Image (cartoon, one colour):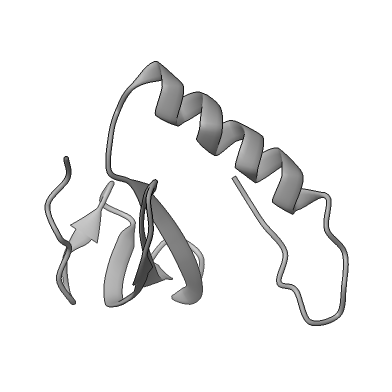
Length: 78
């Protein structure tokens, strides 16, 4: 299980945590600032478990959500 991230924490020397947005069964979502993309604000999901099953579930979720298109839904990037 991963630790809770705090505002100011930096992941992968790139994503600076702004605030937590929510938590679910697969992990937590954080508002982050992408320091390599002109401080662009993103939502970043961090998986709580590093297992083949959780990674498979996340990839399936990503594939499903990335196909959605609607003006009220933001795009996804990997």
